[in-house]
Amino acid sequence: MVDVTGNPIENIPPAEVEDVELYHPKSWVTKYVFSQDAKVIAIQYALTAMSIGYVALVLSWLIRIQLAFPGSFSFIDPSSYYQFITMHGMIMVIYLLTALFLGGFGNYLIPLMIGARDMVFPYVNMLSFWVYFLAVMVLVASFFAPGGPTGAGWTLYPPQAILTGTPGQDWGIILMLASLILFIIGFTMGGLNYVVTVLQARTRGMTLMRMPLTIWGIFSATILALLAFPALFVGAVMLLFDRVLGTSFFMPAIVQAGEHLKYGGGSPILFQHLFWFFGHPEVYIVALPAFGIVSDLVSTHARKNIFGYRMMVWAIVAIAVLSFVVWGHHMYVSGMNPYFGFFFATSTLIIAIPTAIKVYNWVLTLWRGDIHFTVPMLFAIGFIVTFVNGGLTGLFLGNVIVDVPLSATMFVVAHFHMVMGVAPIMVVFGGIYQWYPKVTGRMLNEAMGKFHFWVTFLGAYAIFFPMHYLGLLGVPRRYYEMGETAFIPPSATTLNIFITIAALVVGFAQIVFLFNLIWSLFKGKEAGGNPWRATTLEWQTPHTPPEHGNWGRELPVVYRWPYDYSVPGAKQDFLPQNQPPIVSAATGKLL
Image (cartoon, rainbow, N blue to C red; front, top):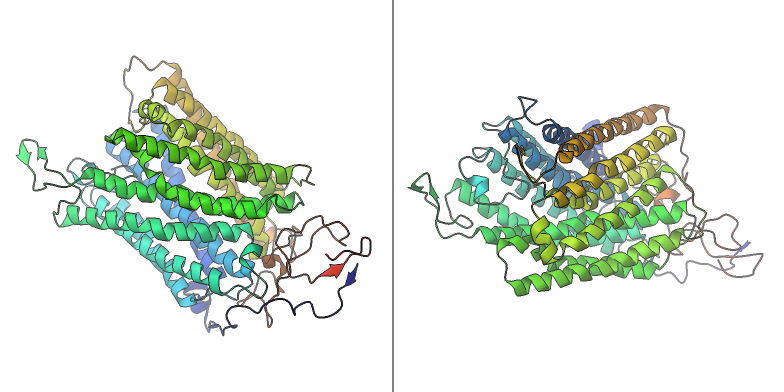
């Protein structure tokens, strides 16, 4: 293997923007608190999201304890039960998964993977985190407000959300809506920054078709969110006006306890349209970064090129587009015109095509690969299996005639958690195990990591597989207590106890994970610069962890795509993206 003669950089077009001078912090506060470094901001996002995520974990335990042992714990009354459900759902979907994928992984990986020094607007990036942090604080404040947090359900449907009798009707719903509005403002600042950075700040040679699929996933999800979140923003503002100012955007004329309320003329169905116009793309706002990260994990740890790179890119784009025309399948039971039901059922099934392409390509990447069962790889495979299983039940619910009898049962809870909960959480863990060495310079403990994976993976199936059966039995969701219900057999009670025990065990595994994060920070094995022998740019930085500005004096130059693994004739089994062309001594071909 010999170096190519001549200057290999001559044929690579220059970067689209000039290198910029960064603001360098002058104190501990500007370096670690009000930092403009995307890597520090990423860690701030991750720590905040994980902290509020552990609150959601405890809430899920309380929900499960009530379902398994109804009435045994006096502090879980019907009001608090519905408050737990509402806060658990909202935290997991918005404040944990969305924030962690886009704010955490996005901030850390975008500049590093495209060879930039930082986001294009570092100050705006810093502001976006603090607005998100404020949104989380407002949400947490609702736990301590008079009447507690809202118990309207995580979809916040009016008129229930703001009527007397709903838990948290006083301050809970106001703080929830204010928190959502703040979250969307913060995300919009960060999201616009991502888009501009990806389009304008790529280093020399980093064309769009040389970007890692992780960046494609985050980039597409960001655009998706920038288009979908305004619907939720408008809905939240109008619902807040209904609650505080007495307007009637969503509140119809209502008689309560024989008294005509001041509301009249509003449409609750309009809120459902706005909510689900955001709500279904939200599934893919979480899933697309997960798709990208899994692609990188599979290729790296199978030591094999990703199969069908361009097909994977276009599948991500197709999923993003199609996700905007399927929201109606969440409203089959809302009195929809049957012809609309046919349209939404068809579009829902069509979106399975690009999704299936991605699954096929992951499987074909693994086929005959040199698979290393590292912890990131285990979580990646766990995601693929779980997403396929969850997606199959989604095909049932996408059909009107099947969805209508199942929509109010535990079957939906099982499907939703497999697709939107377990599967993306698997990727979150896989991503953290993958990039923790770059963030800290140390490896996470592998034994604790494998314990964490197997308990989480098997435990999740012990929780949600039986839940499908409960749904088919007709066990309704959202109920505080079943009571004496003739059509529900006694085995349902036994299953509920089994599911709750499994949930407690899985929760314990997350405490082990947290311990591993802290323990490895001080006692973990030294990682070196590129412990996974990966090709993408973040592993080629001159320092680990990367310093402010990422690359030292010179930005890297990209010569190849991000998946050159096991190249015949190459000296080692991977070729980094910034490796200039070389000639194989064995084959005489240009590598």
